Image (cartoon, rainbow, N blue to C red; front, side, top):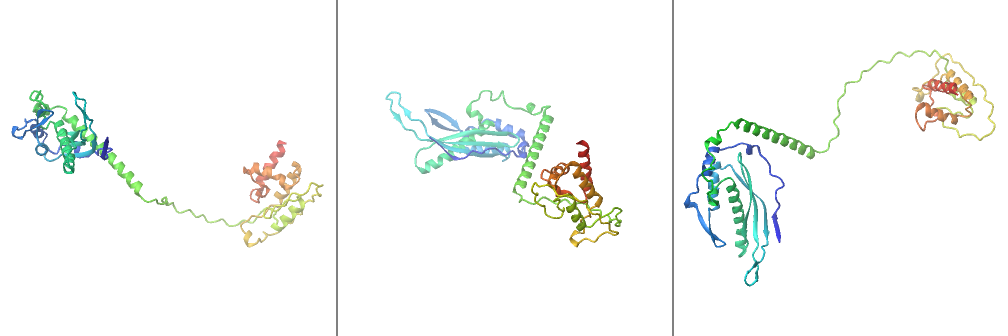
Length: 354
């Protein structure tokens, strides 16, 4: 059974310093390719075989010497894996085996790259021994990662050890300029991504604020023109309501409440609305000061157009108002002093088309 103690990292952060070499690469290569000092080598028996190895402390010192302490080791994951039972070939008897601690490690060297490996250590003995097993597995992972950089690589075999060494001729190449440009591109891409991520983080953490008010220029104040005396005949509001109500059956005042539709009897004769001509502009109540007066000629023309179109009451004007004003629920009360001329022209066109 497998048990995970630490969740693995989802991604490894790339730092700009990883693209640079803060140490002498020539020195690093010389240290790495130098054969392991025999006095550092230790032996252990594994499966009946004698294997050479160096301690974790020795590998740490070689890394410090080669990379001037500019390296990092990360533990990404630890787990315990249950080993399969050992089966005796002769008797067939199964012997239970202890679990194995496994550690996933990552070694990072700026300018040289990243290496990852798994380390392992049998989990046996008491609690103190088991606790030490995790440390031993982590050290094993670090040493394996270092070997991928070439540290103590000769302990695993000496094939091509001298023929495939990196020399000065390999370091002095024409691709140096290309490599420098590649580093710059990688660094710029990283900085751009980092800047964008920081901006998104600031935006996500910022408290919600109302939309900023964009200042606008001060409005241009135009002085109103002096009032001009009307040149058309006008009637007061009271006179208009009285005249229209007498001349058009059940036609309510635009400022009053709508009248219910009368019963379908014979309509009463419609007398011509009286026209009252005033020699001066009538005085309106204070709450009606901004409401324009009705033009008597427009009202009379509307009455005549209703007759010509066969409109018997004001409610039959609703369909015309809806079409003229472009409002589905418009009614005849939408007709006002400031639009009656246009409405009359609309009715004239309807009469011409009929």
